[in-house]
Image (cartoon, rainbow, N blue to C red; front, top):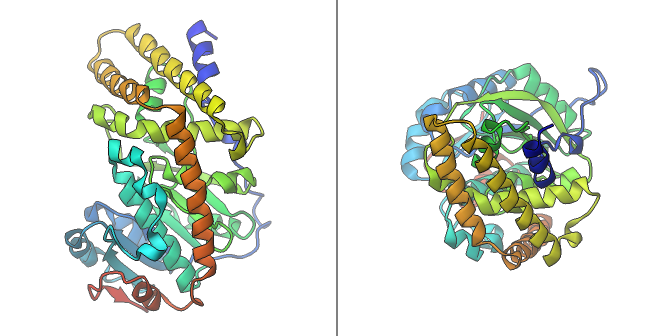
Length: 375
């Protein structure tokens, strides 16, 4: 191993595969079917694969858009599904007594506002809909994920009878942050973690929430991962994109990357959230600065290809954002997140008895677009 790669290895854990369980062989899981696919969509034109999958599995389909216009465009692509359909949008101030969470107003979100605040809110709505509808197993599915087979998803649903969550690794195109894409470009052996892009959860046991931050899915899965109850269900693909096309993307991801990578390092070390002290976060920030500087140095040695230049611009943006993060910001966000988890669990305990999808949507006061069909 080169000195450069050794430096990167000391600063960055390239793979979290040891934290994820592998499913037992065929025939070892109790029967459990998928109740619903929940798509927190922003591209109505990309829903066809999710609709086909719901048709093949005979499960409900929930499309949560960000605006009324998106919902209107999404409905024609879903209206022929007969397993139960809800197409609506999620206003920012929906049901604050349930969805009002402190991480959504954390100061770090004002510094770099991100679409992940919107995604986290919609995924939390999906969790509440699932509880209120009496569903056992649901799949969160991003609208850019491809390559899904009904048989593989059905097998993953069966696994949730034993594990709290089953996720697919998105390996082609790899689902990583901009900095991790740059690390791979510079020769790093960067792995991917089975996150929220294609994630099945047991709604009764996975009782955490999605906080408002980049890597919100990693934090949703943190407690479940600590309990060794996340299983890798396989590999999928997503639509390719250019990670270095807009340097602001790297800046917007940086705080969430610091928090998530720092927390998961604790799991590798056998620690817990209580070990994330100010001293710990100072060390995390020091490692992160060294990682970004090391990636940049390796890229500079690779030549003058345009992609190198764009990657370096993204790293510059990430490094500038990183310099504005201190241990107090990390301590504050983690404390706020844990307060949100406690509040969320209390709110779940007070939900009414399960009913059906229509009554769940009504209870949450989701906008009525006449888009709820129960087959």
